[in-house]
Image 1 (spheres, rainbow, N blue to C red):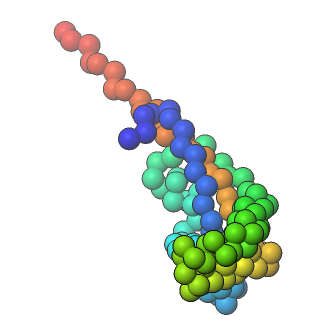
Image 2: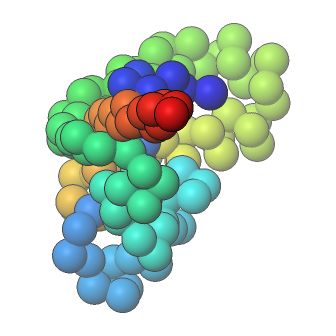
Length: 129
């Protein structure tokens, strides 16, 4: 449990804002599981009682990670095919390539969120007479 005044920070992959219904379907298909929500994360955090909600776009870093993953995987293709099998290796490459395309097309983004749990005001003791 986060103490009052504590700060929570996390990243996630989400659908880019302002997408058409077709683009949102693509985000759901091409992004990681759970990429779509009906409500924005800042709204969800606020409704959960968090304050000072901030977000930063970290999509460029996410894209670089995907690209490096593909490069490292293809550099070790023979060994990985022996360990994983052809089907699993191919599935992983296709998944990363698909995600990379969705990033490049502005369909999915990575955001860093931070929010603070408000300090609770303590009830003042009543004076006794």
